[in-house]
Length: 556
Image (cartoon, rainbow, N blue to C red; front, side, top):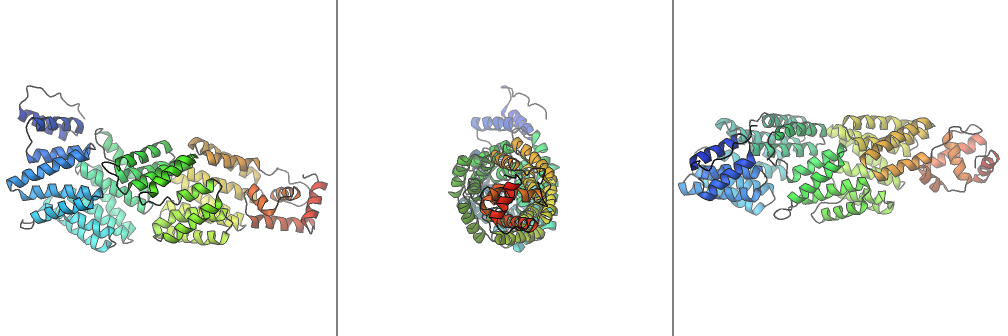
């Protein structure tokens, strides 16, 4: 983009306005806003220029100024008796208010726009007014009606050659199809809408709105690879317009989720904090709770428990449940009872399949820590069904890991290893370093159960390195604890495996099965199975006899 040419003081008003319009076409939004605002201060602009200045204000993040300018443009068009452009200004005022959660204001402006067009012939503005109707149907649980409404809007956009309306309606159709369960068809339409965005066929304001809608839809269906692909494409497009503020509110929260998944925790925290700031202006909006929750998640992963708890509390103030993050925080703090109670309660409340997936992932981890293998098995099986329903690689990775963890608790280390390796490969393809490393820790436990200590040590070392790079201090400590508790290479006398020797040592030191399970990071059932094998192999009948054997063979 060429650098803006300085505005000469000798320019006439028309020359200055012409130069400002050139700046708009060159996408030099900051300079265009300054030039148009200066002209408006000197003498009020005509409605057409006010509408253009309003769009520029919205593009650079000046929402309040943009709304005021649109309102002035609306009044200017009304004074001329120009109903259609006046209605378009009213639509944008209502639509942006609707997106900001200002429902009374939105209803007022949209009602005014509708009334202005009652006696007007067919026009593109009537197509725009179908968009909020379609969105209400989507969020009201009637995606079939929503799809029909968006199709009607798209037809009007195509008829009048309005690419903005056609593209907005296209992404609306995609969202409606996804809500109907026709995910493949829905994402195809979303992709088509994004092609129009990245090709520069729509206005910048529409581009930002479509992108945020698409990335939100990708989040709903856990299609994180598609979300990342479109994020990368749009970031390149935005790089040529440094003044523009394309990511706002809920869109920033989705970006924070992606950044967190990919291990960019500093950036994720920054985006989540930006979202909370944006959503608090001029007054807090309900989605701010989701921003605080994301802040809490990053703090929790880093081991900043006080900051995490504070963020979760803030989230709960705005009708955003702090779960499952808060339950996982309690687990990390060692309060298994509190974590168990919280995750069971939220699992009973949340019934939507997409929302339950993340709950079930945490549920399996927590109830296994509470030694309830039966409940964990049921949750893992349900998660597998959800993964099959959505077909998203992210969900399959979650499901395979949950299944592997349950198989470990059910004493099927070989089956667990198969499931866990499948999960690890999926996380690697998704470029999710933290999740992949969490899975490697479980792989290490499975290898130990199978007596392969070398593999266990290797997996733990790789996981520890990744956790250190991410700044996951709690996970580093856990891996170090597992590494210190490794089984010696030589199994000792007799036919015992390396793990059985380790269990025998703990028995000889006077530890209970529960204490052994906690120290070796295995279940009590697994300890009991090892102890039964020890008694059988050594022809022993009691813990006392096992202790005597351990001392006799210098295992203690």
